[in-house]
Image (tube, rainbow, N blue to C red; front, side, top):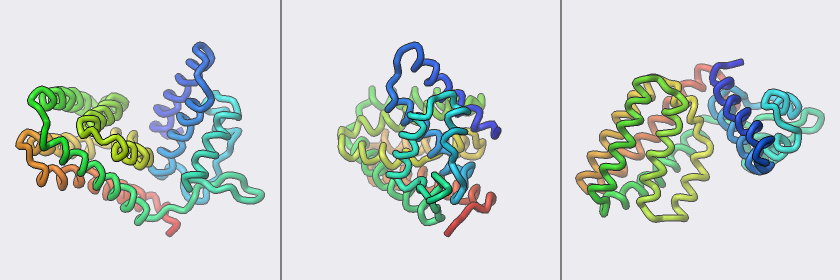
Length: 240
């Protein structure tokens, strides 16, 4: 098993164990499995045209068939997998342009949210973001992959909440589901670039400069797209 698969399956296994003790609902389990499979697909661990066997996923995660089947239904609705006659579920086609489109949209929305924050951010709010960033920096230096993944998510969520734009934030959450966050957190070059991007972003926020904030935030995402495309180029996974 790929080491990143092992780390991610640990998360699914913990959710499965909690479900037995605390009665975690099928929808929560299904979303956890869907997130796992999205991450595999977007990072090239599952290739376009490759079968996703329901029974194998259930066995590996320690879950019943039901939440895995529901997860595959979610992914079919998102055009991440297709149901083909006599083959079952297979990974849907993916292209370089798909990657650019998804990450470009993320950058546009995130840039707008951050620009709004830059106008009115308070010293206390900025200090909180700096503290979060410092924790993230230390985790990156220590190569704590799971913690980097968690803290990076929390850092950007904090910025989005400060924008006080519920619908726009919802749109961003929806599209960022397709970001293979563990792939990035495990990449040393990305971790270094992430820290530099956050430093530049915090400086622009401190200057209350929305014009500068937008491209800084957008670059954070376009850099991610370029790194992912280079990775997928190396795997030779493209179907189009």
